[in-house]
Picture 1 (cartoon, rainbow, N blue to C red):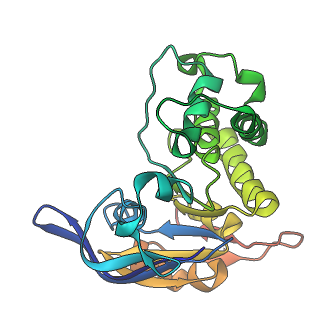
Picture 2 (spheres, helix red, strand yellow):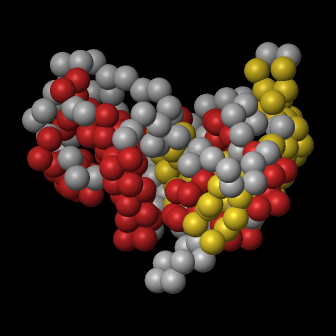
Length: 258
């Protein structure tokens, strides 16, 4: 499944954030959207998932205008986890995860055996099975983030959109989150599009990188093609070296004069 944005103009009210942007989400790949604060990364992600209306251009999924999909139809193909999310504090983990099955149900229907199988799979895949009876308010930040991903996974999306999934997580939980994302992609074939601030994480896990600067696409390509000392100077205004380390598949970013 391919999602394509063409000549996108996106903004809020009279303010345009994104100007004349073409962007394609390739099926089965991990795509990271990077760029400085305020460059428009989250705005692009929202427009590609219909969370934000665009002023100009078009977004299509497999050639069909995204605006023509019903909400339930779209939710069966695209899963979205925004930066901010909340649930009633008395909800247990399994109860919250089960709400991801709503796109497949009528309002009066309860979970059937197939729903329960998918809910159990999502909890096991994200490592929250042991937490299933735990109140969501009692979960740690890392646990809560995995629970929300499990909730989105029960929609059985072909592409998972994540807006800064490691925000507010300590380094151990950030690594755990990146491992989970890569495992869902490699083992289950789920495409992933995520906004990331940590460029080392983007370099490590991504198949494709889109760089945004001042509301325009600066570059896109494989991580090693895109994350270069020149890009870092021109986009982030920092000097660095990209260093190869024996035994590592991906290079490391070494910042100068920290």
